[in-house]
Amino acid sequence: MEIGRDEDEEKLYKMYMPAAVEARSLDDFVDRFGSPSRLSLKDKDAREKIIRKLEREFKKDGYVIISMNKSIKRETVAWYGPGTNGRDLVKKFWG
Image (tube, rainbow, N blue to C red; front, side):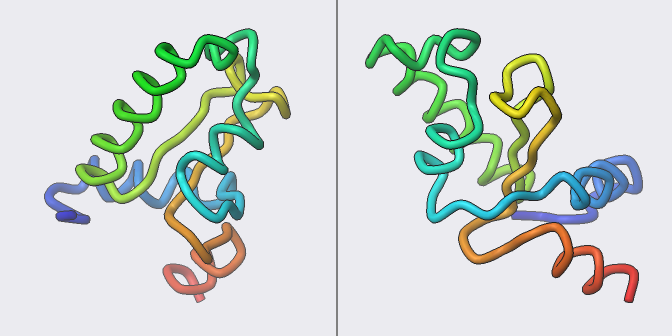
């Protein structure tokens, strides 16, 4: 993962930190925060396709998001890996 390759990517990485939620894994993140009807999670093949897509995004960017229109919370949520949450990340970067 190459965080901060350019200013825009670093801004995006930091922008979603307040929306960060805790989850044990990417699967847990999708299961807990993804809207089953809007993410097609009821279909096993579609779910696996979504997980693979998010895995690629996580490896590339160091975080993934579920947008507000696809989130069960109806707000954008972000995942930065196991054991992370928004408060810790904001403290780390902004003290």
